[in-house]
Amino acid sequence: MTIQTASPISAASITSLSKSLNEPNWLTELRTQAIEASANLELPKLEKTRIDRWKLDAYGSYQAAESVTSVLDLPEKARSFLEEGKEYDNLIVQRNSTAIYKSISEELSKQGVIYSDLASALKDHSELIKQYFMKAVHMDENKLTALHTALWNGGVFLYVPAGVKIDSPLQSIFLTDNDDAAFTPHILIIAEANSSVTYVDNYTSNDLAGNLVHNGVVEVFAKKGSHVQFASVHNMDRTVIDLCYRRAIVDNDARIDWIIGEMNDGEGMSDTTSILKGKGSSSDAKVICVATGDQKLNITTRAVHFGMHTSSDMITRAVLRDSATAIINGITKIEKGATHSNGQQTERVLMLSPTARGDANPLLLIDEDEVKAGHAASVGQVNVEQIHYLMSRGISLEKAMKLIIYGFLAPVVAEIPIAAVEQQLRTVAERKLGQ
View (tube, helix red, strand yellow):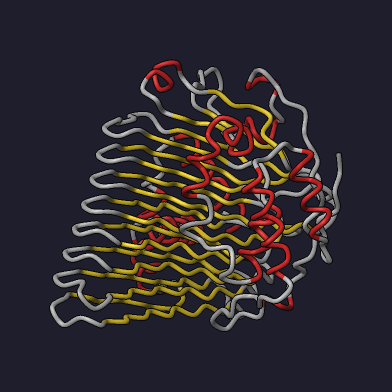
């Protein structure tokens, strides 16, 4: 079944698609409300970036993909993220609009863990999902969030019961290889009290002939004393415009760790936000991006402190080549009443070309006196003295440049919790940087 979702999009078509998929009434109504609201909402206003000039109407249409029963039957591009010969008990693979492979270990199932594509999870867990869906990122924030609410497909639902600690990372792969097919996954993670989990995903594209918009949303709810580690690498080609909101609501003594690699070849906007709602909650965000050609990126990392004794740390590193542009925003907001909070951030941009342009914009918004907050930011080219030092030790210019660049990116790359994904990130960086 194919329903057009390119703009203009009618409420009737959205309602028809939702009903054809047997979605619960609350979701059908929400989708319809969202598409109607999108007509009157504006695009987000980003620092020094005019996304209204980007081609934002290429959403494609919902097209179900054929499922597979073995990882060996996955498309080659998806298999490249998996270690050969290894068993994968906790894996979800989405191709274009729908999940084509999913598995969860018997051990986790017995503990009450739910790990499924979100569309399928609605059949058995509708009321649970309803409590959290579009509650961290709200439907009516702007035109992009409204369109996502109306058009989302596939995605992931991860629920970890109280006290359950998952040692091995859960992984998902999102592949788009048909620019006529909608590609708008939604990630929803709920970690109950005193639980812990590591989730890793990869976004990739293959052989796209035309333009496509990925408008994604990630929502994480970390309950009291829980710990969620979220790692994501986006590596889609230049025909894909990547728009992504990631947001975590963090309760008392809970923690969220973000490890993000923005490695696309096309235009991109991402906003990764931690809402430190509870007392003693904390967040750590590490983000890298590599931009080449005439790419335009706008990357925002944000921490909002509401609870007392909360802490946040943000590190963003960007490497720019050719005539690429990257606007790197770091925002720490400490609300009135969030006493004894500590917010730190660092943004560094390394430019490898005189025509590349990078801006680092640190921002501290402090409404409370008894707090600690600080930032560091730098924009510049490779340090000539470092190059000379390495070459004086017998290292070639090419090798010296490579060592400096990877040393610059190391704080994020080294934190990737799956070896195969870490190697993929290194390979992508080498390709984009011509190393």
